[in-house]
Image (cartoon, rainbow, N blue to C red; front, side, top):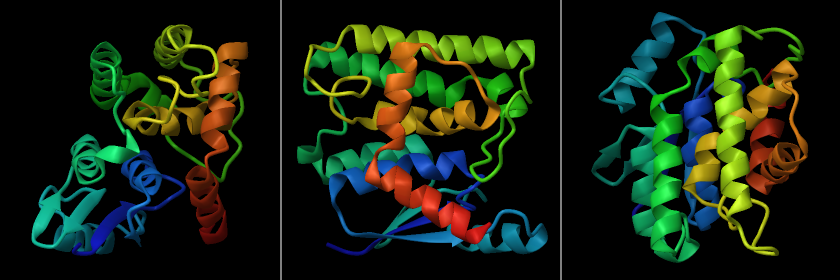
Length: 211
């Protein structure tokens, strides 16, 4: 297989980059993550423009193919490694997983605005704008609904085993920790499962090391 290169933004800041990184890591496929720092103004924009037609990261290069959207990258990775089960096998569960992933991809603007991803900072109590908290409540509603449908012993993630849906919500898990958003028992258990992912821990280590 031709090499897979995932261009990512600053690990401490780039929520969109974290998503396909986790999906790729889950497949076991060999890939290289190349970080482009986002806080260098024109220099950052120029570096990103060299590798991404949208001028944004993440961006996946696989030979001559370039894929520049987080969810599209995850879908492509699923097709490269279908045995990894990045979507649920059950058709109804797969439809729900795609629906919640698309909602995360397109929505929650207030949460993004007021609680931006900040992996290496403690901002407990900040960003608790009413609209952001309303978004947070909707996220937790999704988590509770998904977990309620999972059979006992099937796994700790939204659909039991890890899927693209978990990759899409992983940055929100970090936001809730950074900004001190209160979680109930179900959501706290789910957040802990995401944080325990080896790839999530590796991402955090790299982010702290660069801080």
